[in-house]
Length: 178
Image 1: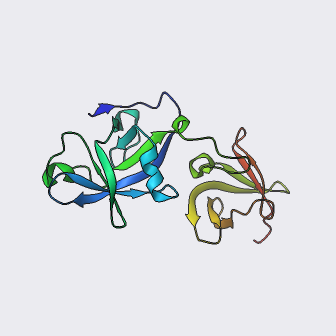
Image 2: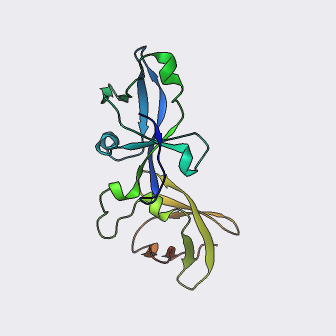
Image 3: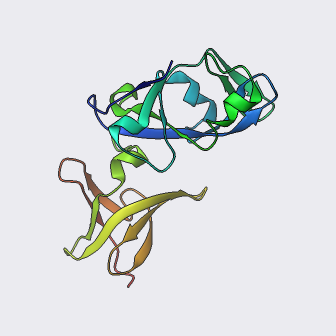
């Protein structure tokens, strides 16, 4: 079941994490970062990370035997995990997939993982910093940019976000607020 999984196929994308145990028979709760949240079950195999580590040997390829939901809680059952104690060793660990396993986004759409660490500059060429986080606010997503100071920039295409250049890892923004 658990073999180290390198990143030779491309960038890993975190899609969720193991958030707890469910019951006494080895089931695990899954917190999903996908939208809708049960889309996490569409991607196999998962890469199970060691919490706090991001080396190739810290990721293990795993497929689940069963999955489903219990009310609003998503759950999975890994092969060979038969009790609560065995399941407990997985709690807190991140879940990822190889980037090339995800469908290509539509034109003008981006995976958050593809925007991370991109340089952010204004239309006039002022460097604001790099994307260090993304937030979902309900109204629109927000880039968290770390540079000479921390900025929260709405990810609104056309109005604020003028250009996303994945090849050059640069986002050009209309941002003259500071």
